[in-house]
Image (cartoon, rainbow, N blue to C red; front, top):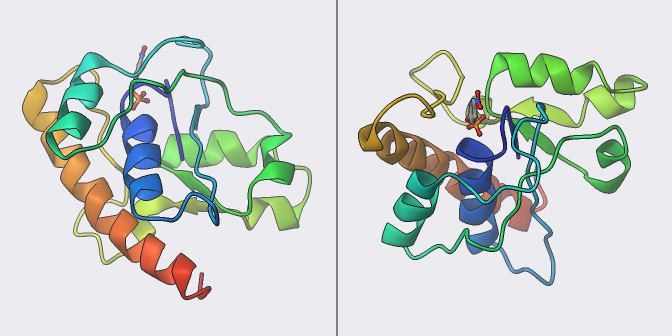
Length: 149
Ligand code: 4NP
């Protein structure tokens, strides 16, 4: 799960998807394309909204996406188009690019396929992001379990 800062959207996406999967079978992680927040805990508003739905993000620490992640992960979900482009710019070949997906394209999204950046907004933005990610992660988890992704 990759966003810009790895403190708002992708920590939520990591927590939500992992909560829907057996951790013995699936490893979910997150990162940011930018280095601004390396080592920091998720934004307190992401922690709060996740806690409301029974998910604990407090052990997560922000890190930056790196080219080695293409070797470690089978699927890489970008939260928005800019993240998608930045991730793809680190890919060394087509096989690596094929691992990268815009997360909302996994469902019939009414939006422009970007998870809105809630960083400069209010708590409502975090609720919206939570609901979007919860809906798409439900689909992703089902497909992963059926090995049809
Ligand atoms: P995220 O949100 O990409 O969902 O973690 C942001 C966090 C920090 C900044 C921008 C977006 N920032 O500019 O510091």
